Image 1 (cartoon, rainbow, N blue to C red):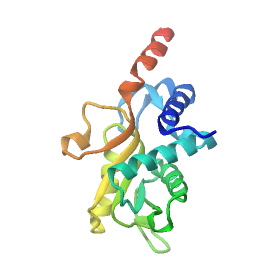
Image 2: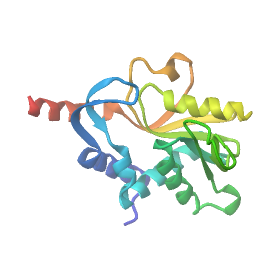
Image 3: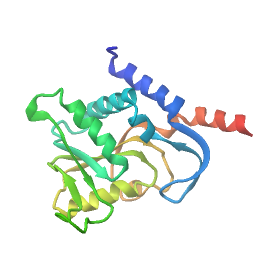
Image 4: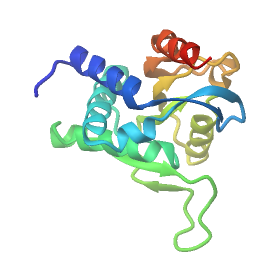
Length: 195
């Protein structure tokens, strides 16, 4: 099945609607309460979802920063997404392929005692499944800056468009494949049916 980028984006959007939006009262990693949850981890764990996320993220990343050398972010959310992007980059010429890394939430106390695992080369794109407050990507960015890595961009699969986004507050530009507003009517209609 050879779909064009716009068709792939629409297909991924449908998959997210079908299997990636859970209507349930949840507490997000930001400690905020929500009536729904974007379960992108289940989408990136599926072969079709992983392939679409990898290809679409790679396409977007190369339009943001064509010379991107590595992708990654804070464990756990960024690992699967970075892996799909690295796999998709294998179609590029070898000199343009992208490596991946991940940032631990705390420094390992054994072995090499690293905070950042994998291969980090600038320019870097920090990736995440969903950005709500941006804390996870900020934590990853600060860890990279502590290693004197500064050529950094940020990208997620979904931007929840939260009002109190730390990235917006700090004037840090970021990108996403989708915005919550693209799913808002669908989510609202599902919530209304449950009342």
